[in-house]
Length: 113
Image 1 (cartoon, rainbow, N blue to C red):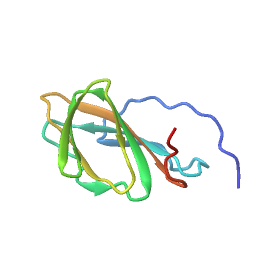
Image 2 (image 1 turned 90 degrees about the vertical axis):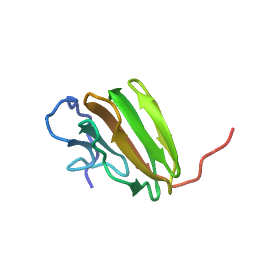
Image 3 (image 1 turned 60 degrees about the horizontal axis):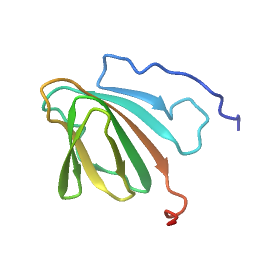
């Protein structure tokens, strides 16, 4: 198997979803993408399964549903979603919502310090 090589991608694009990591690169478990949602649009409820996920809100306002709880996240917010968590992201603002998601498979449980 070939080793992963460094690369640079620009966070632009007109589509709803743009994969940044995971397709074509020789990465082990890391995945990432840029999501752009119109007002009222959502990605749809789904589970992290055996992955951890991070959302970084770049622009707009998101309603992030985490299990039975909803949190509001604005620009420059960072949201951590643990494994096995059912969640959804919805654009609750009046402008476009842009965010980056990053996932990684969990090999071990979290280490507490």
